[in-house]
Length: 364
Image (tube, rainbow, N blue to C red; front, side, top):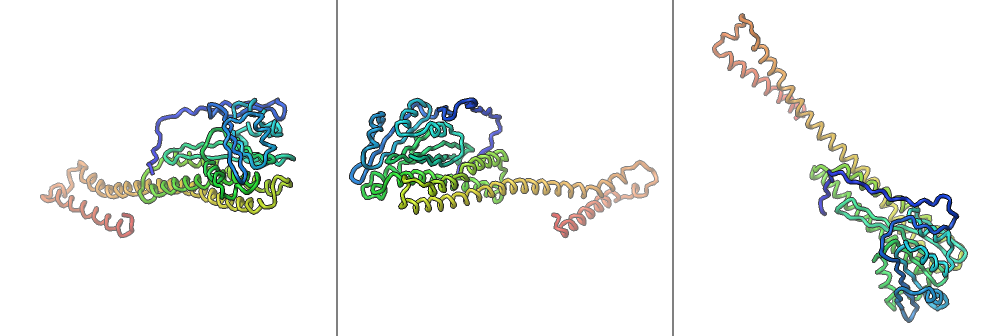
């Protein structure tokens, strides 16, 4: 892994300008995020047991007519900044403005809202760069409406390519099941992406631990703190997913058939694995900071110990030098022919005895 270097230069943090919704009526379609794609794209994938159709940029009439056709329709919308266009599409499918408001509010926690004619869920998808402290988070909204599944993204992504491949496979299970299974499959893809985040963060923390403990390298506390903040944001998005899955499982609606409940239980099991791993990462990050500070303190103690030993050794040497540096005439040793060499010998013996004593006490 590329070694993570601390940035010593001051970085100016651009604060996002928050859109105020105070005083507006409930259901007001206000986009609270930033523009992440040049244009809003609509892609429709319609399939049944015998065929699959990919329709790029379907018009409003085509989407309305698709509701009456047999099979499953998966509408993927990439981009949220064209609110009027998005409002018309969702209104044609019977989606409430309250739900549209939640879709456009990209800063909310993951949740599920069951409605009489549809189910709305929102989760977050993450990407982390292991060579820096860069962390991206995007909101993904998913709706189940009769024979429609609608997935709404902040920007285009290839996260659903494996699911598209499964749909194109005529022998796949998904081709023989209804829109509720596709709804589950979309949520499962989003949840599986969390395993990659857990693995990446675990690799980063283990790399830091190896550098700190085994290689005794100095690691920037700022980088450790940055990753801990990233992990905190990640945990805030992971914890509510349990409620997302439970509300779908307990919703009394004909949109979720009895045959899908085992898959939802499997989704709950996946969540538990992710949640446990995320909590372990939180403990690792805390332990990493504690280990770094402890080793830094131990290193400082070692330095202080060496300096103390050196200072202690020079105490008797300074005494001898000061004693015979006095300007008294009646000092018999000053007249000795070998007095200088005797004094040097005494200094050497005193130093040797002190070093022997320090080593005996395991201070060296």
